[in-house]
Image (tube, rainbow, N blue to C red; front, side):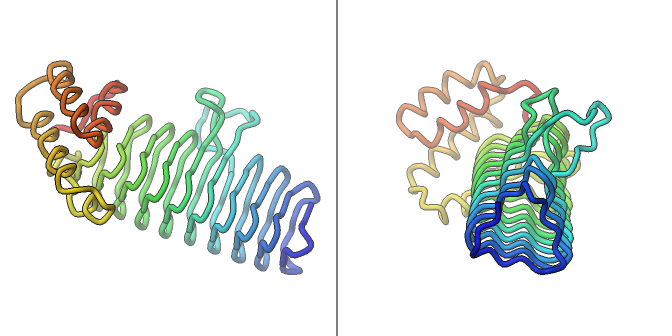
Amino acid sequence: MIDPSAKIHPSAIVHPNAVIGANVEIGAFTCIEDEVEIGEGTWVSSHVVVKGPTKIGRNNKIFQFASIGEDCQDKKYAGERTFLEIGDANVIREHCTFHRGTVQDQSLTKVGSRNLFMVNVHVAHDCMIGDDCIFANNATLAGHVHIGDWVIFGGLAAIHQFGRVGSHAFIAGMAALNKDVPPYVMAAGHYATPFGINSEGLRRRGFTPEAISAVKRAYKELYRSGKTIDEVMPVLETMAQDEPAVALFVDFLKKNERGIIRP
């Protein structure tokens, strides 16, 4: 079903079962395949391929030569029915690749809203990405990666499969992540190590001086006290009662399975 207000270039190929919302624009030589849904106000440039089952939300911008919803690069994948969901108001630049999930996980790759994916970013199968993130050129996410909200991922940085990055973290360019990065932490290097708290990012997002100070104290407990994660958890839980921002640390560490980056 194609909304009458949609603008589709004559050379574009749109499957008859695709759902194209109001005021969607689809450029020249773009291919929209079966079981694709594109929400109102989304702009799709020329030479884009979107394969289903894929659901794209409202007011996204997808630039030329992007590949959205393709089969994953997992040798276990055997053509099962899996999915990709993309939220609203994302910007997906040239040559980005987003793959659908696998039945070995939740059969779903999911991207939130208001994210910026710069040129050549790869989002592999079963990734879960939050809102308001920035992924610079050539950032690479392996399969089953979970990224929180407001994460900045530098150019050429890469993360190992099943890795996690907590909300408000900052990953420097060319960093290689083989362990999880807790919320708020700045990570750099190969393999990445922690370099303090993303204080400037927190100030820009309206965190109070008191909240930032509490996050810094939590970081020191985690990384400079010499305690194990089990030993530091009661301290962080007590701190979180006075400052809710610290609760992100607590929630993230409760799900720790792979270990976190260390100095």
